[in-house]
Length: 151
Image (cartoon, rainbow, N blue to C red; front, side):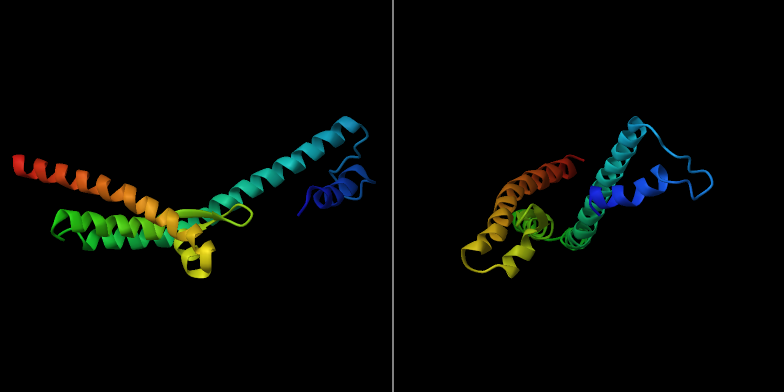
């Protein structure tokens, strides 16, 4: 709902004739500006909360798939293969990508939906995350092996 529509809904009931008990008639423009500011604040808060809920709902399936993949690859050897597989899971399930007018979607969705050169909008972020995560996970796994060997 736009600010004007919200303003049109709120202002006649508050600033107009007092139909309801408890709604005094507002006479000053200062109170009217305060009402407009509150309406804008509600719109901003609703927009931010909507974005947070949408991001949470789109990332939960990826987190679940990554957790299950992480759990089932604990005994995988060699460590480099384990790290490459886990990095691929993270890259496929959790890499965000921007598309259209600032819409954040999982990059794997773009890789399957788009065609031609546009498909790179989904594939390149996945490859970048995979390239960064593989050495990080290899180093982390080798440090854990050293800790286990020293015990």
